[in-house]
Length: 382
Ligand SMILES: [Fe+2]
Image (tube, rainbow, N blue to C red):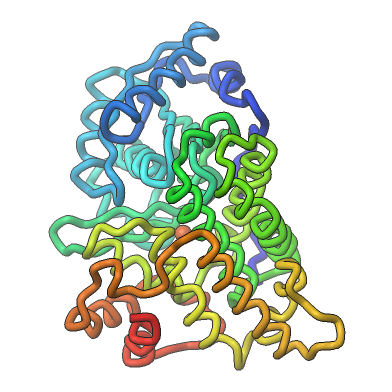
């Protein structure tokens, strides 16, 4: 059980929250921001909205719309160059997990020097980062509240997990109005990422009463709001519900840890450049089925949060009902349930499983598995 808990000191979650960013950044000493945004015109536009909010408070900034999905060490190096050449003194990420993870990584390198690979692992930083503001525009990764960043090492073709308390943003922003432009497919996959965070946090070895409360409520909110927001993307009440859910799930796993869903997911995303939430949606059912022998009471408890529990059923039966509820939700959201349909090749599975067995995020899984067992979990949904 963790005895230390990390979260941003300031968290803005409401419609119109973006308009408060400049005031908070100024009060924390920010003057000139590098706005780290997603690649292309969409990222430029999101970055422009952030700049407008800063300018209202007399702050300046430059937009760098250079972060692709699954951010790489090269993108981080480019962001560091931009930060230095623009004379910035703080960072604002705007976008989903990729932009936020990249900004965290840029912050590590501008404060501590070296290359981002030097920070792979647990608490490797020695210097405080510049002020980091994370403006989330999806409702899934939880990166705006976590001490984690995932960056692809382009030489080794692996995803580096960086866990470091110093990369927890100082200001997190969840403005439901920024999430309405997400298409249904992205709404679905990011929502399933949030669900995988909540479920893995709830069943993992390091779960505590604090992370349980966060994860349980997140599951309840996801089952209440995700189907609705998938059907009706402009429903701001549902969008706000998913902002709360993803935020809670992010705080839960940031403080408890994750498990094999994420350990198995990272190598697949790194190799085939697949969206993280989409892969997690496929892997969540087989991993939790594998966990059933040691986590029936935990999964049975979550069935209640999903609205799937029956009072006269045993824990084991309710755990089965929870697994079925997750599968039903995935189907309702139109997400694929097989790795082959995502372009994964059967001959790659042994090597991918070996990589998964080395993933630091897998250490929290309640039931240990060898690389051979992990390979079987891939095959269960191949
Ligand atoms: Fe995730």
